[in-house]
Figure 1 (spheres, rainbow, N blue to C red):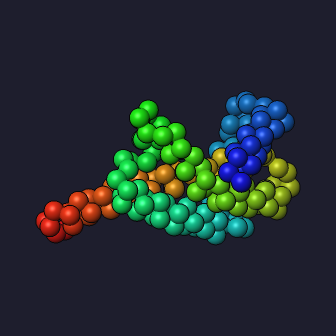
Figure 2 (figure 1 turned 45 degrees about the horizontal axis):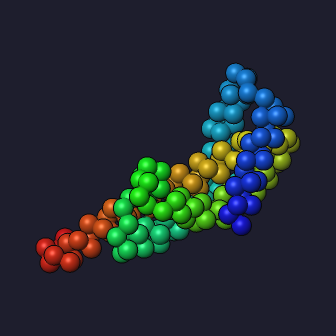
Amino acid sequence: MTWVVVALALALVGWGFFKHGLSTEVHQRFWADIFGRTDGPMTFRFFLQPTMAAIAAVHDGLRDARSGHKAFFWTALWDPSQPAGRLREGLTATARIMLLGIAMDVLYQHQVFDRFYPAEAVMIAILLAVVPYFIVRWLVELVARRKLRHANTGDGP
């Protein structure tokens, strides 16, 4: 399912660039639409998607701390000694949330704009699911690792 979501996201971004191009007008509309989504119909998704991402991130961050992994995001991108699967773990954990985000944005765009901007749907899903997931997973991992270190040395909190 992860690779289906990645392929869908890439296809939507490609379709969006092909259909609407990349100009100053598109850029301005994109940012106006992004900030316009914070009110009106389907505002709950601004709480739902980051919450779902945080739940997955807490679980994965605690698992990383217990297994002694380094900070997830930095390791996945810049530590060649770690397996390449670390980034894949993040994609797998956020795939369903991202798919839900894309679907919700398609419904939103149809309802509000009566048009579909595919690249915007992907960007909203990334902003509301993937970014919070990486941030929360990193924070949980840091706090949990510190707590585990204190528990193992008997220093207390």
